[in-house]
Image (tube, rainbow over all chains, first blue to last red; front, side):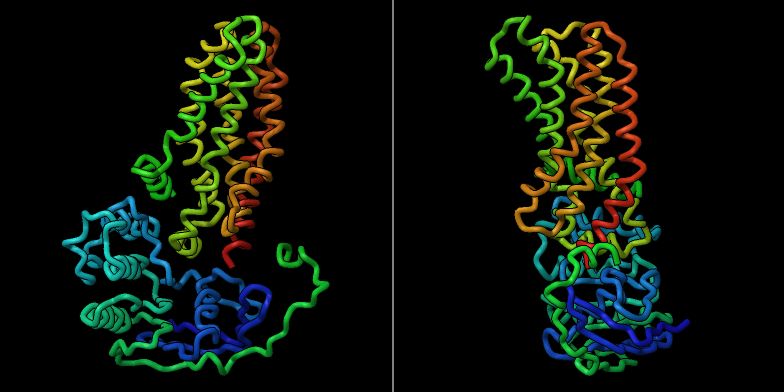
Length: 207
Length: 218
């Protein structure tokens, strides 16, 4: 199966940020989103993940696993409890492979609150294989990771691609992936139209 | 969904989870009122049902802002929204977890506290029954309010202002059940209205809460 979007228009708040976003990914391909800060990389990823409804076009969030800036870990729970929770939510039985891939074995019984920023990030990324979804949406996944872990993460993503998965990444770091294409997001920048001052305050709620 | 419920219950009972906060508040309130009003039976017994119900309501209010705010802060709410559970289900589980950690303990300790108000023993079954039927509505309305205000700075104050007026019918009919029970009058009508409010919450608020969450997450 391929993953494609055509003529997607994305918004952040009331403002349409991107228009006419189109791309297609074949199994095993990764798409790296480029563009300066504020060009709409996160907005595009949130739209693809189904968190922000697109202004135009359609997305298929059911096939996507999303990693955001925030780690989404519960500090009072251990690493194993955090991962087991997400595994059950996504209907995956075994957290073992994900733990192995990110070398989380020694951390399994530590509380997430006691981890360093990089260890939290690793735990958060270990959730990706647990989702069992083909398209990974990665928003700056390597923040606070050391070079060794970045390389390890690159291998995990490469393994996912080799197994027929796909990935859309917003990153400035080279993960050493074989099949990557770059997509410059600033190409799709929509002409900034501020919403009319008299716009209906309920429009957002009912649309 | 069971995984989410178990996680929320586990989080509530771990350090800093806030389990027992509402319960402790309820205990203190029910102890302070007889101290403030004076220990006379003929003064405490008539106000007992109202005070106990008011205490339950305020105790529920205490932990409402945690329902979604903590998940939003650490990013779990975004991930839950992309998970294969519908947001309606997430809201239902959150309301259920809130009730299990707040409404249910309140219902269990209420008979013991009613001794402080010299409530006649004939009123006790009605006190427990009214709380058992009424407190789920408090949790549901609170979950809806929390979904509306999630992501707002200082949202907990706004949450209280939004939710308290919605609590009025439950308070009126809940206290009425206990009062009538204490006086030996038939309780059928207020009990039926109380149950109707709760059932209405169950029917409507999952969808309203999920819609509010979707708007706040975009």
